[in-house]
Amino acid sequence: MPTRNFDVVILGGGNAGMGVTVATREAGLKVAIIEPDLLGGTCPNRGCMPKKVLVAAAHTLDEIERAKAHHITVGKPSLDWAALIDREKAMIAGIPGSLANAMTRRGVEVIRDRGRFAGQNAVAVDGETLEAKHIVIAIGSKPRRLPFSGAELMITSDDVLSERTLPASVVFVGGGVIALEFSHVYARAGTQVTILEVLPRLLTNMDADAVAQLHSETERIGVAIHTGVEIQRIERAGDRLRVIYEEAGSEHAIEADRVVNGAGRIADLGGLDLPAGQVASERERIALDAHLRSTSNTAVFACGDAVASSPQLSPIATYEGRIVGRNIVDGPKHTPDYANVPACVFTVPALASVGLTQTAAEEQGIELRIEVNDMHNWLSGRLMPRPRPGRKCWSTNRPIALSGRTSWATPVRN
Ligand SMILES: Cc1cc2nc3c(=O)[nH]c(=O)nc-3n(C[C@H](O)[C@H](O)[C@H](O)COP(=O)(O)OP(=O)(O)OC[C@H]3O[C@@H](n4cnc5c(N)ncnc54)[C@H](O)[C@@H]3O)c2cc1C
Image (cartoon, rainbow, N blue to C red):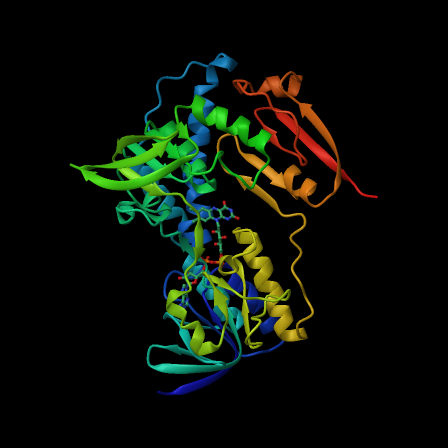
């Protein structure tokens, strides 16, 4: 097989992979990105960007619902789902091409293939071997495979973003960010939505009291939420699917047009042949040091969703990619800092957070001062009226703005 030599070969052309090219190309290194699919990866093509086109429509439906508070009479809205999906696809269509141009201008060679390790400093693509001083794993994540029978009948967020027929009913298996965000879109579009979550509550990475408000609002718009359930199996029921699950010790069944895997995403390391690269991993986690470098092969780095321990957010993928680029150029000196990561659940209304949750801060022994600011009765809050969530909510350790309520807590450090 023919062999070519590079300073840096990057597996994956998403936010993380492209982040690596900044410092490495500024330093004049010879860089290649291997990408079998659309350049840009998940965020612009199958994630953040197309999702926000749907979320924007949900916002408009929400505004229409609340128009009468402003003495505006609006007829019953009608959403053309197929046209909305077409709008979404049209809005993102040009992104891979403009990113390809950006890579050309930056002097990065883009190789259209799927790569795998062929040695400690070598990657195999179709028909050639690429030898490199540094190899970066930036392959992103895939929906988690679930162990119950019929799991293969579930669709993924990719399908939600592509199907031009609005389903009459949908079940989300898992109550994480993706499930919540799409639930708010579907419910406002008229779909009957059910969320089945195995844990005792939704969005376990966020403050419980803030999530309780979002939980209430999600139920108010018609989404049925069941927490603490265990999925037994999924089976066909004519044209529909039946989900059999256990809740509070008894078995239940629910039928729906679609069942969506909303149970989180993990790195898909299977096709990389990590042993050939002597890259240690355990249970879909690449073993990394504090500089995002493989603990077993110092030529190899990882960044973005492929790093199992950091938040799966596109700005974090870019940030980690840039750190890996600097570590390649400067030597392993740079370490990511995840202390104040902002995050947002793009429901309507959205739930935002930054930094530690109250629970995480308490676990770390940080002394906290909790401050709560309920904005419902503020004039500025009443300008844009929202139904008041039914649940009581008291403390959180960072700013949130949900249904007109803001609360935060300030860590008090000695
Ligand atoms: C529906 C959805 C909505 C989201 N919304 C948001 C949001 O609002 N805000 C936010 O911050 N984040 C959001 N995310 C998360 C965000 O998209 C990811 O965190 C981010 O895209 C990860 O970037 P990455 O470069 O690590 O991986 P990716 O962007 O997934 O890129 C990895 C690339 O590697 C390629 N690849 C895979 N295997 C190989 C191989 N063997 N060889 C070569 N290439 C390979 C893939 O084709 C892919 O293009 C969302 C995700 C989803 C699914």
